[in-house]
Image (cartoon, rainbow, N blue to C red; front, side):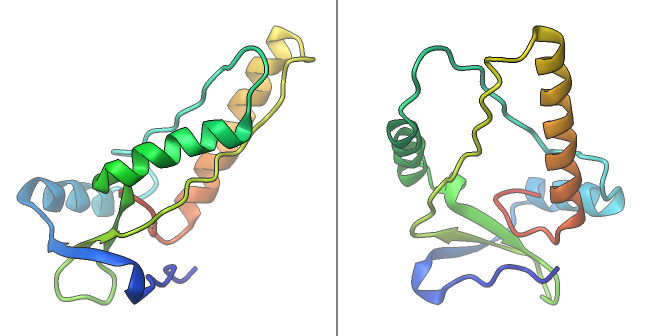
Amino acid sequence: QPLEKVNKNNIQAIFALTLLQKGMLYHFLKEPGRGIYSIQLSLTLFGEVDHHLFEEAWNQVIRHNEMLRTVFRWPELDKPIQITLSQYSFKPVYFDLERESDNKTKKMIFAIKVQDWESTRSESPSGCGF
């Protein structure tokens, strides 16, 4: 899949990669699909969850932390770069598993993580990170 195009009006800054980032990219490209430097976050929340407030809280953190608004590009470039976006909106995915048994919940969470992992592994890197 082609890389998602970055809107020129949404670019805050463009930087070269640091030496550490170059090393991370090297290892990422050397062993594609291994999951090096990839983290999945899943949260168990109890009680009523106000999705709007939850998303707004995360987006507030993203607005104040430019590394969470940074994407990396290297295909078809002489040197890899990182682009800090002016704006980025996080859209979490929610699964309501409260009516499931503990055993079924664990299996479903595992399946969801595997599916997410497979979908991000098969895509061209376009997100925040390698």
